[in-house]
Image (cartoon, rainbow, N blue to C red):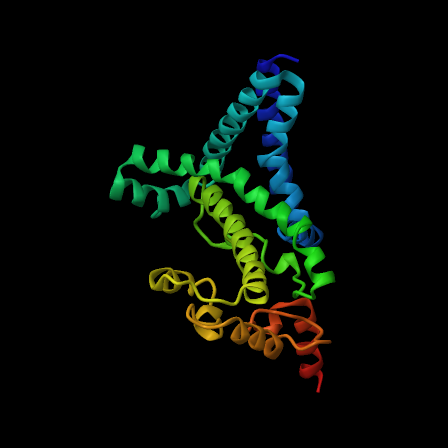
Amino acid sequence: MNALLVYIATIAALLLGAGILHLIARLGRPGRRISDWLCHAPALDVVVFYFTALPAIVGAVLAGWAGLGAAIGGQCSAMLLWVALHELAHPAARKEPRIFSTINQLVGRWRNHFALWWTAWAVPGFWAIRLGQYLVYPPLTWTVRLPKYRSRDWVNLSRHKFRGLVGYDLIWCLYCDWMTGVWSLSAEMLRNVESFWCPIRFDSTKKCEHCQVDYPDIAGGWIAADGTMQDVTALLQEKYPAGQKSNPWFGHPARLTIEGEAVDQAEGDR
């Protein structure tokens, strides 16, 4: 299969997939249920994989490096075609205030578009993070009892429900919607890892100030850099007593975990 066929097939497959998703949302109550299911992990992972990773993989397998480039080109072309079609289908919204047109005015059209497309390089990185959430973190919940999480509560899409998002605004907001969910879940997992295995503050005051936004236990329990190992082991024994069902980061709200959800439900039934 040559690169041109890969390019054409990629455009056709992605536009067909987008069309099916639009159609499903218009099939009444059953369609809304299916659409909602597809907007939450793990089904969402399949949808995102289809649009972001699968074309490049198939293109590379079928036609090598040329196929990889053709598939990526097809992805870009399919997105531009979808944007044009989506804007044509929503003529009224096109005349309303838009995010991309406003930012075009703020920084310039070409700067804005270049920066948006440049962020696509981050997609493989976020897929690596997502795979880590599937493959690396679960064994930690079985072995050292770190909290379990329901991915659908973090990795989901909902910004398409916001009125007025059309074309560029919609596609980029959905990209950010997925991206922030993946990142937030990974940050939550890392909070558990850091507080469980390394509850010691950094010697750099600046680093502590910067990192405590994402790792609140830096200011809420980690041992100071000039402390002792006895302090560290005493903290671990205090925060993670033997036999404890789950070992979350110290300030962790249990309601965000699978176990915590069951606890909250039981309390609500009382």
